[in-house]
Image (tube, rainbow, N blue to C red):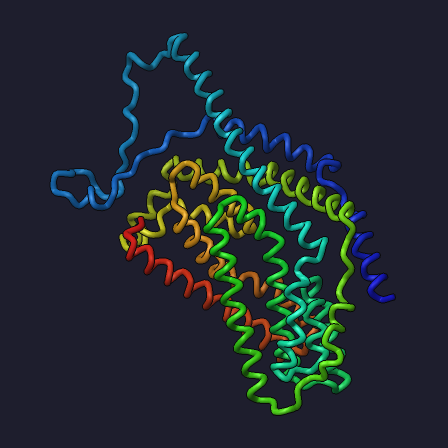
Length: 413
């Protein structure tokens, strides 16, 4: 009965969600975004070809470090444009718009298909293949049965799963150490569920770098959770959990949606995502490229050592800035820069890892810690949040370090 009510609330929440294309404000924003994007595409400055550091250090090269080879300025005879020149400019503008249109069409198609696939997996509950082994893990770690029951709920709502543990702790059924271990397990599963929602469009947009980014996240988190389970087993000598309730957690999970409802929700989610991409990501991509082409980031090579700028050039600063707004905008910027040959796949992965590490403290203070303090006792909440966030930070930094070592060995730049 409780489950039915929860499902009804979830469905009603989806029904109340208004499509962005029915909002006058969003529609006005879309028109403004398209006009601004078209103007930036036509007026985009030419790329200034930078000299490499190797060339700068050669004796025959008299240029100063950080100087640019820019197109020659037009002479007096070229100041006034002839009709043929004006015609060529119009043709170039149309060609630029057509080229950008093809690039964004491909990006939107990949992101839309990825979002649709993620919705199908979530609606049909295909992730239950992971939930079947959760009970075995908690029994092997000698954790209370309620922890195994709460873990599948964390895939849908971390707050609901944590509330189950806190209620059991308040009744004296589980210890503080079991509460901390269960909270960490729920945190990992909630992070996994949230990441999977955006993983499909991100991987569809940038390919292998996106796949490796999520694999590093999930593998590192699995290692951390494995350490928590081993620690709990070694410190608790109680008997194993009763296998009679092995599949009880499956009955507690939400039901599978019909294919019609799954496809409807998937189409709605994909179209909403693409609408917001057109409003936000398209002008963001062009604005980031404008910053690069205008030479506004040329200071990067002169401020940082060559060993850093060789693997983390100025173009990756735009990816780091875009990731502050989310993984999908960052992936969109990365796909655009990669399509133009400005960055490589390993550099995209490096920028995503470093951006995640940089944004980790902000996410902790803005979202994770306040939510945990509202559910857990303060001491337990701080242990869970800071323990999990510190471990994720170390995973991202370790992944970035190993990637730099690999890039150095491969001679990547």
